[in-house]
Image (cartoon, rainbow, N blue to C red; front, side, top):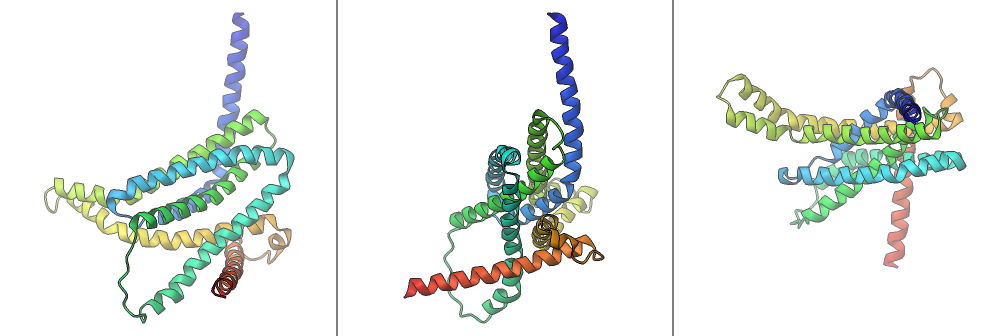
Length: 289
């Protein structure tokens, strides 16, 4: 009896060793996409009132966890029975990310400038509705990035047993959510931490200077994250297409992979924006007819 218990414990210890090793490997392989995930979600999680930052981040985090709960079992089932479906899902997700990235660039380059010449009209904003819209957008983007993270993690443990695959992919998904949104929370609360240091410190003391630096740095970081997040969207999208379309993977082999991925993502995004614009105009004409 005792020997049986020790045998089970030994098996569990070996399984945990395997899981620890595979989780470390999978996390390394997803490090790049996790960096993009951080940049994208930090940009999407900003722009709220200070009193709403934590509730909004918690809502996005819960949505992200739900995304992982949906994605992980589906990815494991599709990998076992219909692996081609994973590639198709990734391609559609890549097209959506490219669209989002290029749409931000189009908005900045064109719509922002035309707004200066438009007649001044009093705008009534529904902040609660705007908040819900931004949270939904963040969760949708997180879903696509989560698919990428889960697929990469799964790809690194395909030779392992099903048990190791399940535990490893689940662990990476949890680490991704907690790690990314934990860092995002720290970023968006920088100014509050800075104000607290300023209030509790003497003027020109080290803590006062650190607090002032935190407060002044936040707007710069947020603007930087908006730029990095847009670039990350296009890079991730381009990477999905380059890694899964043989023609694109072999195209221009001397060009650095990052440059190629950004170029492909940009082209896909431009095509997606044009198609969506045409569809919206056609729907608008039908509605007005």
